[in-house]
Image 1 (tube, helix red, strand yellow):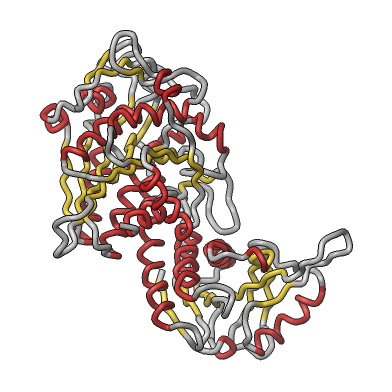
Image 2: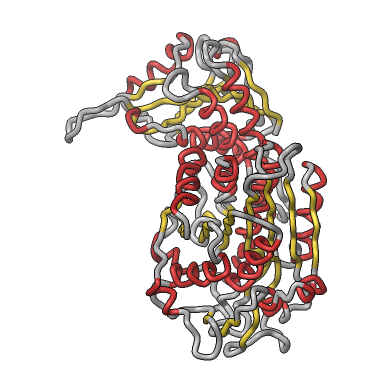
Length: 500
């Protein structure tokens, strides 16, 4: 998608479609209260063109609500699309992502290949608004129908962001450039997550990560079975051993010029490219979605891409532990005891609790490489989805200061995470009679016991765990995003890194 930034007056822009945003200014409450939609622009020609529909009462400017006007009088644009932001008093910059995504997705099935999206003039900070709109446009342009033989490319060819002439140009231009880098990186993650398990094996995931690294200037190393044995990654290897596909240990390094000290951030992702559950076989219903069990690893790869492009002054290492979890004759079994890289022994209760095993060795390896702060991401537990639904992802941390940085990152990323508890009671649930710890703690509090398992391997290193199982896959089409992989956590991880 070609992107461009303009400060030209809206009325004179020639385009297939001009999209502007509106908000509901009505503040009264009660059954008699009626929406009062207004356009968030001062362009007199645009205001005049939309006056009749806004006065009709048919359009209420609800969040992502749209109305299209053909051949709007006084405008060079062939069409005028109005996209709602909801109640004006509650409008935040994150609404711009959804509005821009809605505008893009509105055009795609209608054969419109170019659009201009106008930023609101005074409601929101110019740079943040520009960044969010461009991110939303890229997210909205993604569709998952990669392998349809009759696929018609409905991608938007040209997206122009229009800013008011009086806006802060430097901030707008910076936000625009950031939005491109972040939006493309989130879509890169979504492309990886969307791939079928037979196409994206651990080896291929390593190849794709290395190719990306070469393009953006990251250092990349991809190891396999021999390296796992050399490092004594018994937990990671135990998951891998039941598949004919070899594992991949993917290591990406970002080393900004002139930065040789300070924190070294470790990004560790679960990369299970297909998860059958192993010997503890999953039910057949919806097992096809288990190609997305590498979404945490893909998020780390996408975040590393964005980091390389935006160049924060902090060193970062990304580690993805990629494997298939299969029920082969060589597969690990319930009741096995495996020894992790750290030397801890793990009593395997359920082979479908495999993600925490690969992450255990990934966290230990990150510390061995010198990482001073850790964050991991994984589609780890159904228990987290039960607890939080598909509205918030789960977050855990052993360090309040480190988590405060992440919470601050959410204010920019717009993603929804909810901190869940750790504690001795959860740690007690994973104590083993035969080894050091069990890989499951029973039915209750499953998200917290899984996090406690990982905490054992983070040890005293400041650490955050993100359980993204409920948000990594969008179950239904929404106005601003297609059904399928979401790319969740890329933006939040990036902003956490930038906080250092």
